Image 1 (cartoon, rainbow, N blue to C red):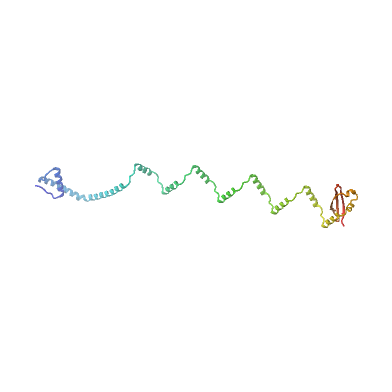
Image 2: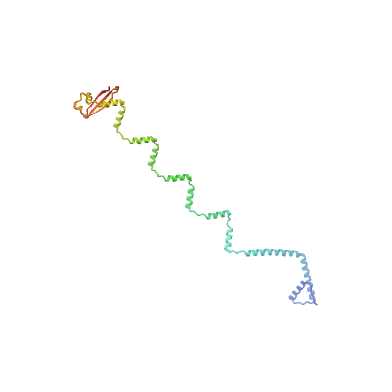
Length: 269
């Protein structure tokens, strides 16, 4: 007789057995198979009842991991790949010492600067060591540079002249006036000294001398009776002087053109 199992598991197993072993559903076979199937069904039921909840949790965890992995795979798939050279460069750069943002900015600023030569750097050091000057000193230097230089002799002359005693405006004027005068000889200067030592006469005495000088030749010649007649007629120069101690007498001296020297005294009345 044939056996029609109601369990879906049994039906599935029977189908597989018939395919694998080409058996028919005879009573004996079915009883044997059914017993085996029932035992298997019992084992499966026991297994599900004892650990079914743990397997379900594990399946849920695996499905969650798969979702996470799928997202990571999708993200990495969207990335742009790099070459081996780029990978090597990344490794080399990773080994380098990093710098801060400030250092990076300083590098950028310095890179924009114009470089200088060793000579220029040395000149900068030398100039830095120099003592600076003020704007006033610069202006003074410029002003002095426009001046005309002098020689050592001129400088010495300036020093010598500076040591001299200055004169007033009046003294300078007097010097100019005196320079305009006509000079005299040593003899003339001596004569001036002698004449300055003489005693002067009054205006009245000078007038009387003039009047007496105009007296007749006979009167003058009467003073010198011993002079030859020929001598009396020659031209003569007459000099007058006051006799010391006698205010009313004048000394008279005559020098003729022939070289004779005559002298006498005139008493004033």
